[in-house]
Image (cartoon, rainbow, N blue to C red; front, side, top):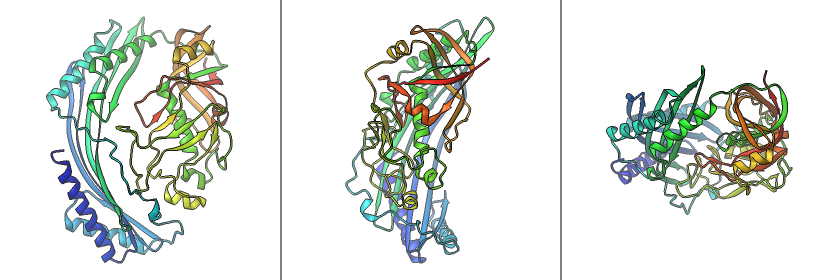
Length: 444
């Protein structure tokens, strides 16, 4: 953005205006979130430009309380008149709302005070022509990697930067700028009438930390070519190794099961599991919200509550839930600073790399792609379409497709055999490959 400091000051001023207006209209408490962002997105396919989009957006979300009656409204018009009207709309909703004993702002002592600079803002000063050049280099590297690459779904580049300001009637008012950039490529290969597709991507706060365009394209092509000749499997029980880039989904299901909303609604297979061993003793999962330039880093959560390092799982035991202020009150607990989600969840890696885990598995399935949404957080039942590779005697024998893997998440968590040191850093959940002792693989 042309002048981040000026934009921050503008949004802070608008936030104060909304808070003052909420008080003038009789609200006993209020919270305001303002944002403004901009970016460039483009896609190339088969050597030609498909889309170029320059986007810019702004918005304000306002929540007011009349005692324990709550009302919310939002607008993308940041004129003073529109903001006054939006506050009025939130107030009207609150006046006619039902009392909720758990509604309200966080406790003032939990709000962030000494706010660290997490180095989250690294604008990418490239124009559309430079972006097109990078995307074309990425796709060309993929298409030129092998004669087996016969088609392309394209390469995409995204550059994003924005400013967020949060304020409430308890005196909290703070904002900061952040950025997020990515480059991806997906291609199609064909051999002996068999067609496969795969992809690769890179993402970072700082464009200097992205993988090169050529490396992204080459990896996309390599992954596609490796999948050619895929076949099915007969139904069996066997060990399953979730590759690092799909293993994060397993941890995502854990987070869903210990999220406050699912717990107070009694719709989780981990209900009342606090203090119980749910993983083997070697498993340690912790949250590190203050990592410099981390994709999930945040000095405070969506309510202004200070974030902090903490353990979710230690020695295999569930140590904490994932709670906002509201869900914590519903459960008779204190917020964990997770309104809006977790921040840089890290699964402590083991000593073995992926190749070592494959040899350790001996005979079994490597999962590199998951399909469908067959996960029941209430019961823990797990059933998803999958693709990957069949392993015998510690070596990959052939790619597989059109199979389903099934189990129960409680059993799967309890029978984790090892976690690899091949940690995928491209998301908010950082984990290596995860080897599970046994699952049902359904095929032909």
